[in-house]
Each structure stands twice: as structure tokens, then as C-alpha cells.
Image 1 (cartoon, rainbow, N blue to C red):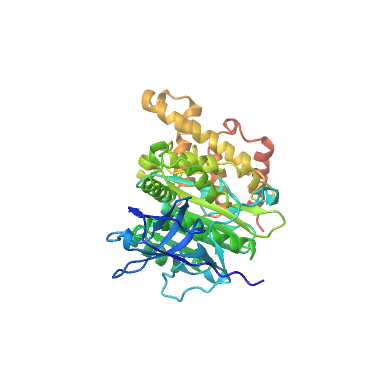
Image 2: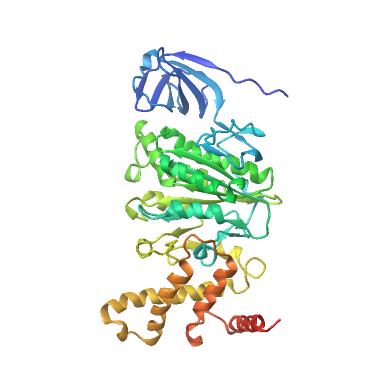
Length: 468
């Protein structure tokens, strides 16, 4: 059956305008998300999108600057087309704008098809439980807060912390455990021109660009494009995953810029604000992004999300990280003190959490002792952090011997396991570093480590030391 051509309707004059919004009366069969063309004699054509459809008033978000736009003189054309994007494997290696326009001096991508950017929720019956390890090359994540295929694991950063830099490192270093088809979709939201050029040049200089699609929305772009960019990126990711069988990692930076755009548009629409001025539907809106991650039953591909969230004023209870934490399956938290001491990446493993870690580690996925290994490192490191606070009061000499050992362990843990600079580190290296740290402690202080696991590791060490 031949698809029906879209119905184009043109209207003369709008009722009013408010900031980036245009209010039009008596529109016929307007669709939510429909593309709009706005023309005024003597001015460049503007683009827009229908963001609210009412009985009497249709609200249009104007993409370009509305300075000088006279609502009564506007010629408004509803194109009948909703927001779509080009998808296909030939997008790999491309750098595109937040709406899919080329930024790499190459022709516009033809692709394999055009798909609506709003996506469709995965039927819960068709979802498969995430269970496969993804190696990010970051010890604090791979060893202590493992990322699992199909998971949503945000990075909680703060102003001045290298959240976006860590995301870029993961784009370059991430890979699946068994060499399956793997791709990365990187969506940058509200970044500067300098950051745009940095990302493009950095990825082009590495081998990662051939398996990566970059969507780069700049701070100077229209506000509405910040709401479109992650959806365009996720639509591409879903096509690569569920049509071509790729395991796709979607890295989004920064969700805070997205939420600010959501608040700006809600304020222009004079909606009743919720917490701290953000719209009451922000939870639902964020969920419409994050819940597009997953693995299909009997399917070959998957979509995994690693969004970066900059905490406003460093407040982890702010509505943006608070709601993100409800929807996602854990968080990677960056620490300012570690950053000031030159530790990179400055991941604070104690408040960090991967709720799906147990599903992605173990004998057939990482190493058999992974859970016990991580538990023991957590326990000693947590004791050492408490001992550091106590030492500030009573002095190191006033601590019990176990606390003194834990205090020494804490510095070694941060300098040797967490700190790795910009170098990629394999899971095998991460596990071995952790074991070397545990072996600096008396055996009777390792209460989370079973004797069977300890002896098995000792036997492996002896086998490796034997001459071949």
C-alpha cells in the first residue's frame, strides 16, 4: 500500500507570541510534534514544531530567534510531517548536529530509512533481563560498579568535575566482552563550540570514530533542539541494535542541559511549576528517554545508556539527579576531593552503585571471585575512610591496628586502583591490582573473603610463577 502523502495546511496570522512560542487559533487536525514553517515577508523562513494541541489554541515552538517576529503577519504552514530522523549503518563515523544535519563537511546522510524520533516502549514481555558485562576500560566501573548490557547507569558529576571527559574516555575505550558487533552513539547537549571541535577532533584521531555516531547540539542552537537531540540519538541506536544486531552504548551529556531546556519551555507556556520550577511531568519525560534502553528476548542487539548528569550546585538531592536515580539502575558518583588531589577519574566508589552488577559478573562473564573481591575492597575502603575521619581527632597513633591498616589501604586504593589517568585498563589488570592491594593486609582482616576463594587465587599465582 502506498503511504498517504502528508496534509499541508497554511494559516495567515497567529493569535500571539511569548518568547520562543507562537499561539495559533483554529488549526485543523494539528499533530503533536508536527513540523511547521513560519514565513514573514522580508525575513528569513523560520522552523517550528507543534508542542501542544488544544481545542482552541495550538502552541508552536519556534526554533530560530523570534526577535522581530510579528504574529499577525506570519504565514504558518503545518507540513503534516512529524519529527523523524535518518537511520542506518552508514551513519557510523559521522558527526551530526542535534537534529541530524552534517557537521563533518560530508553530504547529508541518505541512510536506510527515516524513523519517528519518539520511539516505542519495549514490550515488557519481550524484554530480557540484562546479564552481559560491558568493559568500559575504567577500573572503578568495571571492577566496583559494573556496567551491564541493557542497563541505564548515569554518571553524577558536578560543576568543575570531568564528567564529560570521563564520558568521552568511555566512548573511546568501551567494548563488549566477546567481540560482538559494537557501536557507540554519543549525544552532546548544550555544549560550546570549543567542546564541539574538541570532541570531533579527539574521536577522529582515534580508531573509535568508525564505530561511533556523534550528535552535537551546541549551546547556541535553539532550545527545542536540546529536547530533540537525545531522541534522535536513541532512534539511531535502536535501529542499529534491533535491525542490525549491534550492541549499542548511548552516552548522553548533559542531561542537566536537557532538563533546563524542559523548564525553559514550560515557563514560556506558563505551566504550573513543580519542584524548583521544573515541570511536574519531568519524571515522565526523563523516563521516556531512559526506558528506551534494554535487550530484546530472542534478539541479537541491545541498547545501553550511560547519561552524564551535572549536579546543580553539587546537590545530589536536586530534582534532576533525584528523578534520574529513581528511573535508572544505579549511579557513578564523581568526588571533588579526589579531583583536587589529581586522581582521575575521581570516582567515589562508596556512594556509587550498579544495581545490575551481580547479573553481569561471575564465572562465565568476568572472574569467579568478582563479587567477593569487590565486597572485600568496599569493606576495607569504607573502614579506611572512617578511620581517616577519626585520625583527624585522635591522631593516627590512637587508632586500632586494623584501622591503621585500613587507613594505609585507603590511600593505596585511591592511587593504584581508582587513579589510572587517561589510559585504558583491562578488567584483568583491574582484578590483579585489587588482589595486590588485598595482599597488603593480614589474612584475618579480610572477613568478606572466603578461604576457598583466597586459596584458589594463591594456587593461580603459584601456577603463573612456575617456569614454562
